[in-house]
Length: 296
Image (cartoon, rainbow, N blue to C red; front, side, top):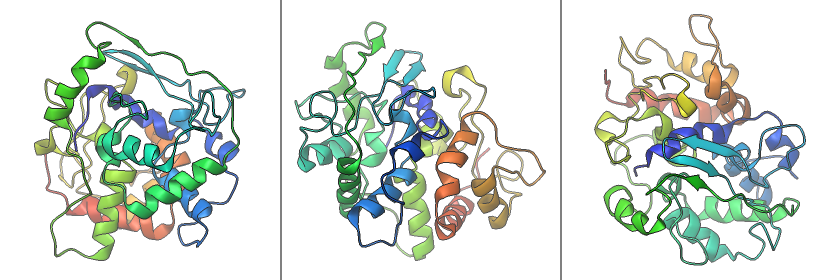
């Protein structure tokens, strides 16, 4: 599961205070028997809300239009409300499945990997179905999608199949056997729903994620905003000195062990994503991160 460098901007997908609140018709609940309530939690864990909501107090929730500025040009997120003309109101659940797991539109076009289908491809059947139920429940908004503004040759969609061959492995999320249920849950949240590797993993010259350096940081933050930190348990460069409690408290409040606070895009991630997870999920994330190979 690897990504194009444009998706370093996707940390922004988890930000913009208030967008998720405006879009939620039900309270997110991972334990609910109601697919919509459970899908709302998957939606939150996946950080979908603010990527698909433009910034500003007057922005229409989930109607798209947020600019993701990259070295290849500017991508604009699309309307994912159930509006039949400008949103996904005419999509079937099978169309939605293909989009998340295959990165292909209902018209058969490859999506640009600014949409992190390379991580979402590992989503479980139930999470996918419940997420679809939730998105069908939100108010439809008619707002036309803004065309991407990409430099040459990245504006050529004909190049995407070649990139996919090099950087995309379709299929369920697979990990080595023998770990605890908490570890598996944390791995799934980090690598699939939360797609943390999009920002915290360095990239090769073609823009794919360099999984040999998984979660060891990225020298280029979204929109040139500094560096993305190392979140492996390396004692000198990563979070090796953090306890599990330090990690869970940080994910809940944004407070670091030394009393500092998360800034930039990560503050948005915490406010709109990780702080809304149930405590057991934050603990699972900590368990998984502490199990990673320490990398400088």
